[in-house]
Amino acid sequence: MVAKIIVGTDEKGFVYPKVQERTDICPICKNRIADVANLDYKVKNKKGNFLVSYDHYTFVSQKFKDFCEENHYEGLEFIQLPKSPLFYYFIVHNIYELDYKESLFLNYRDCCGSYDETVITPRYCKQDFYMDTDDFICRSEYRFASFSNKSYLFVVGLETADKLKKAGFKNIYFNNVYRQD
Image (tube, rainbow, N blue to C red):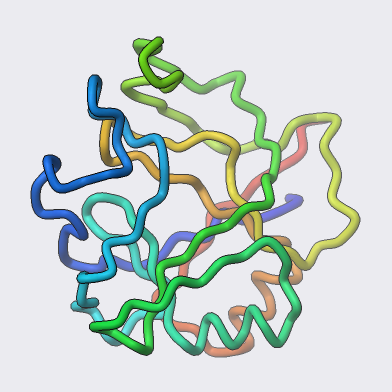
């Protein structure tokens, strides 16, 4: 095992109730192609620290943001939600290279360069990919799921996962990432 995919808890709502309201999707095929925070959104699940909405937006608590800053993780962006000031829209810029051999990329769209659906079983990192540390937070190269509800996978180092557990974060789960021999 070389890393973990972090999985949050349910935010119990849509950030954008109507697809027509979204500015982060291709106007032609309606695939998600960007990350645009809805600053009018109000977090419903105030007990979580790593939340994912029904339309696959990720929010983190002040506690999670503080944890990231105390550990000096790079490539992270936190956009405060004015109607939920203790929560942040979470964006990760650094990429962790997963092995996509077993993934399905369905119906490529020339209009925006995306696929209608991306299905993955993220069990392995790329064979020639290595990190200098076991303490990091990164994201996948591709967004996964279907159409406007795609999102990145968030990958953390083994040391990071241990730190999160020791810090007492609740409702954060992990899936293993391995290196193929």
